[in-house]
Image: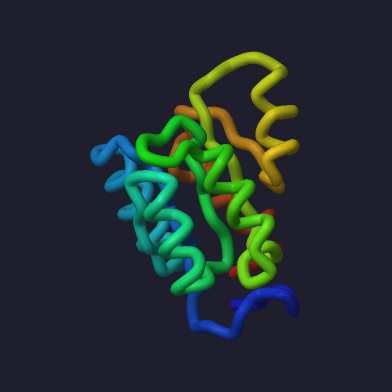
Length: 134
């Protein structure tokens, strides 16, 4: 597997999936794992901040509507921390409307995918963000 120079040296890219809906999170985790990624999980924004700081994933898939700390605030905190600011954050939200993209971008999200996002489409997006080829 080829990677970009900015990605940490790992056998497989590490993805943090931040999703409060357990069934959807499990679906994404299973599909991403079988698609060649190592995956860690968070059910809320506070967990996302903790896991990102501790494990420095290669990309964070961030639901924006989260309990405890919402995805917008979690992203702002990650992007303001020099240890995690370089990690791409892909916003995932079921909210429709053009304002969501702008709000996610202002929070520091690097990319945006609407939910529901089919698992295979999420894999394509992650590979695009990380510039990873099989």
